[in-house]
Image (tube, rainbow, N blue to C red; front, side, top):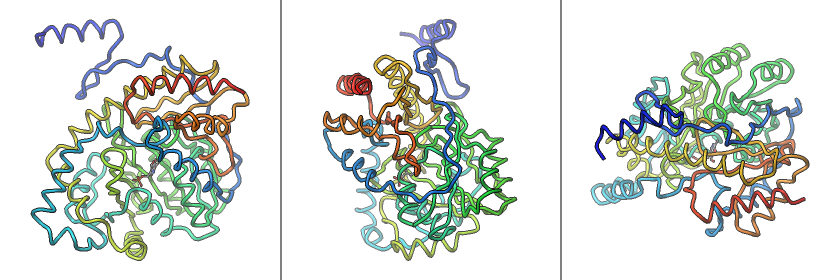
Length: 432
Ligand SMILES: Cc1ncc(COP(=O)(O)O)c(C=O)c1O
């Protein structure tokens, strides 16, 4: 068809409310609110620090996710068909061919200047202007968060986190002997600042650890005003913030949200990120921009694992340099936004009446709250026998909360098998 026919069609669809235009981004299918279940309510964890004991359960969940035949609603990973695997592969082979000596050398901390330069350039899109010297490269965001926690907290200290919170971080806190103080959070706006302020007045807190942009599992996004307020609040109390921004590039709307660190003037924010959620989790390429803790984090990185792999960060840097990363992100975001909507509306069709589901504005995760006295651990065991992946709610709390909740990942393309798996999950969820 001709371009003018396509434009005419878009105009008509827009007129009927079926698509919407987002400036400088394109046309998007409008979310049909009526086809989505109700949203979960804000959470209300107990206001006392607790030791963390999630490890045994985490092991069960990742063991289940390793099964290659499982329908992958349990793991926060991308469908490989959504990733420019061939381009990355070509970059890796070229580096090995052209710079063989370099590829077998240690890449000592702070890590590849080429990737740090590329990250500094990208930081402008985070509302920031970091320099290459602000970064230390790490093995994924997990190592970044681990080093950040080591830099600011000692065993027995209390760290405030949003509730529910990513189980990998909880597991890291468990390994470091830290206590978790869970702060009430809203499924859209994230951590509730009044509750955090009250906690800071009541309890000695060594650090706050948050995922302000599209948290895991709620998918919440802190508005800019809240980010600025948070920085002011923490500056008054001289408490550092570990900001995990692994999902920041996966906004479904037109604009990349700012990082909290872009409001910080005191160097109190340790910004962590990686390419695991946007490109290649298996490359294990991440970073931390640790603010005033830079030197300490760099030393800790050396003490912990000496160096990062040499070739893979360079392959990613090449994709960033040539503009391939931005093109890839545009298409990835469109896919993820559509997949999140598809899974949300399948839940409305197949899950028990009264099920609630989050409405993330970015990322690829859905938080599902089942009605009544549902038992997500039992559902996890039943679904595992049928090779359907999910993560049960209690993993996301140090207080064993969220027994009636689960997290579903929408990073994989839906096909007939995964559609049928969602319908079956709905049936299993209705069993008591
Ligand atoms: C919030 C959050 N932080 C960190 C990670 C781990 O990231 P990486 O694979 O880069 O270590 C994940 C992975 O699921 C995550 O959801």
